[in-house]
Image (tube, rainbow, N blue to C red; front, side, top):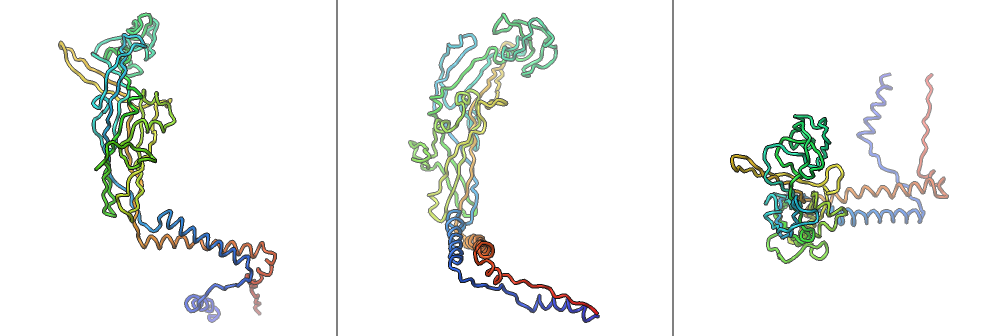
Length: 390
C-alpha cells in the first residue's frame, strides 16, 4: 500500500529533476510551406531592423528635455479709439508699442499681447444708472431693482430706484450703488489693428538640458535677427511672426482679436546625440487652446484699476484688457546609443518569430490538401490505459 502511494511522488521527482524534455521536430518536405515560413521570417526580421531598431531608434536610451523659455515681442500698431460720446463710425487713432500691449512685461514660459482694451475713466463710489449692456430695464417698475441686492454683473448693489439711462435717456434702467459710471456705459474702446498685429515678431530664447547625457542647449544665442521662422524654409530661426501663427488656425480671427484667446507654442525636440549636438533644435507647433468665439466663455481678459484722490474724493481708472496669452511648452526626447537597449529591442522583436510557425502550422494541419497526412505526423494521440482492481 505504501509502495503504491509513493510511486506518484517518485515519478514526479524523477520527471522534474532527472528527466530532460525537448520539442519533437517534424520535417515536412513541402517547398510551398517552407518558402512561406522563410518569407514571414524575413518580413519579421525586416520589421525588427527597420522599424524597431532604426525608425523607433530602439538602439538608444532616451530622456525628455527640461528647460525654460523667455519671449520678447516687438512691433508697433495703430489702435482705433472710440469714445462714448462719438458716433459708432467715428474713430480716432493712437499708437501702441510694447509698453501698452506687453502686459505683464516679463513671464517665464508665457507672455501676453493686449489686443482690445475697454477703459472707464474717473469712476467714484456713488450712484448711477446701470449700463444698457446689463439689460436691467425696469420701465418704471422697481420690482427687478430690489434694494440691497447685488447686480447680476456684480458691479454694485440695486438702490431700488428706476432712472433714465445715461446712454439713452428714453430708456429706464435700474439705478445701482457702486463704482460709477458703470463699465460699458461710459467707456472708451481701443482695438489693435489686425494687420499691424500680424507683423509683430516673437523672439523665443530657450535653455534646455538633458541631464542623463550632460548636454545643455541654448536657443537664441548667436541668432541672426533678420531671420523669420518658416516650417520648411527656416526651421531653426527662433523669431516667429504672429501672423504666421494665426494663419494656421481655423477660427474667427476678428473675434479672437476682440475677445482674446490662449495659444500654445510647443517646442518639440527630437534629438539624436549620436551626431553633433548642434544639429539638435526644436520644431515649433502652434495650438489654439481657447478661441474668441466660444459660446460659453469666449476669449480671455482681466481687469486692472488705478486709484487716485482728487478734491478729497477717491477715483479710479478701470481697464478691462482682452488679448492673446501665449503659453510656451517643451516636449520631445533626446537619445544616445546604448548596447543594453539594442539587445532589448532585438529581443522584443524576436518574439514575433513565433508568428511564422503558427501560420505555417495552421495551413499545414487545416488548409493543405494533405492535411490529414500532416496531422497524423505532427499530432500523436495517446489514449490512457484503464486498469481494473481485483
